[in-house]
Image 1 (cartoon, rainbow, N blue to C red):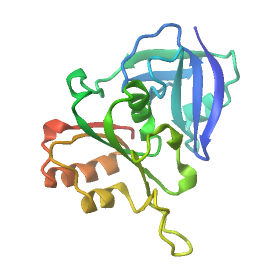
Image 2 (cartoon, rainbow, N blue to C red; image 1 turned 90 degrees about the horizontal axis):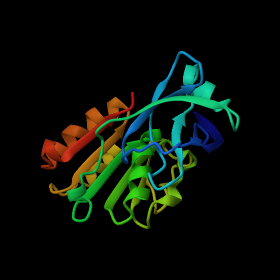
Image 3 (cartoon, one colour; image 1 turned 30 degrees about the vertical axis):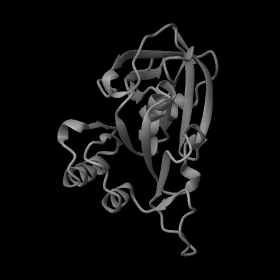
Image 4 (tube, helix red, strand yellow; image 1 turned 90 degrees about the vertical axis):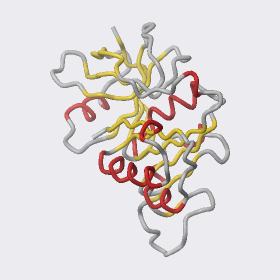
Length: 219
């Protein structure tokens, strides 16, 4: 039985649910089906914690009227969960980990598998673009190494000022058009379908072959 350990608010619109691992094996980038014990509805969530941890974590977006996201947030420590999995092939190949240069592109809670990647493979050479509305929507940004994370803020500044030196004021799509990646880059995309379908042609225009682009669509 998988039992809840804690519920942590990660940002105003998302939380991290931690629960017993019970020795479940998985690979970074995979996802599980999760729901409260005995309920009909379950949802897919990428694993947020790395395999080195004795517990499991998922990052959950709070959806207005969401049957599962609202239900899971009400969990208390010790409460049982229903789980199936792991599933999925959104993974980093072993032969690429030491020599590959990676671009991770996420929006919102799509950052979850990249959090798992970075904690699992600390020597990865990567740049992470995280698309959110404002700085306050950032999720555990302190995990990522200096110069690795580029927050892309989609909401215009109310006072007309630009973002801080560590942020980019604009969507991930505009950032990529202004800063096209090297064609040798391995590109991993995770988030909403609109973002992914907009980013794909931008990467192809930059000369990145489809075989070097990997995507996980959240919704």
